[in-house]
Length: 254
Image (tube, rainbow, N blue to C red; front, side, top):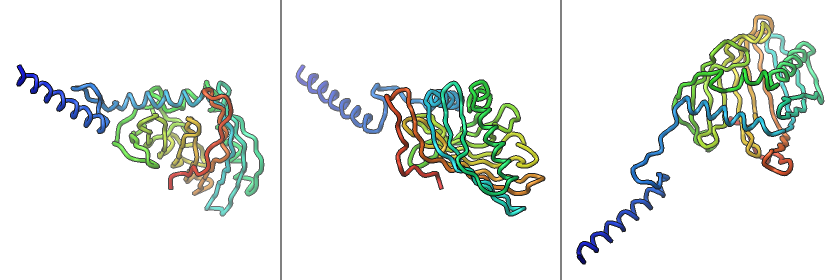
């Protein structure tokens, strides 16, 4: 009986040691279970959930739009205030603008277009979701020190608002950290089919863009480059009692 009791005690100690080791490795506490990686469809669905959650917070910020055209060696710059309200979308106020009148017209059209597609009834047609995309898992990566899933986005229809390319998805929050691709349809004769890169960061729990770059080659304008820089975010989160300003030092991915 004593020998049996000692064996039982030894086994219990071994089991306790094993469970401690598993907990240090981040394994589930229940023996015999393994945390399964989400499928691509599940990742895409969780991305849509994260986007829907971000749409419940109001925010404001400042953007600098800089459009360069290399064929005519022209440039236009617009400093813009953006305000977003849940259920209403975005509104833009131009604070300052300089440069080529023709390129400023292009920036004006860009702001009008973004205002329209930010309305809830339009946004559901262009957001990253199973309704608008299919996806394929390319693998995993790390972006700004955060582990990510890299998924290939395949639009279900041709649209100048849908991107065919890759998305880096934060594996903890399922927020999109980076987009890299081309529009699935030509934007216009002026712009053609641009190649777009966009970086995002969390501001008070809300994933917001921090840098956008676009390169295009249209029949009329030739090669053009668009850069958008974002600053001075102020987020009114529904889970907080007041506004939260973006922390200093948020930088786009090089």
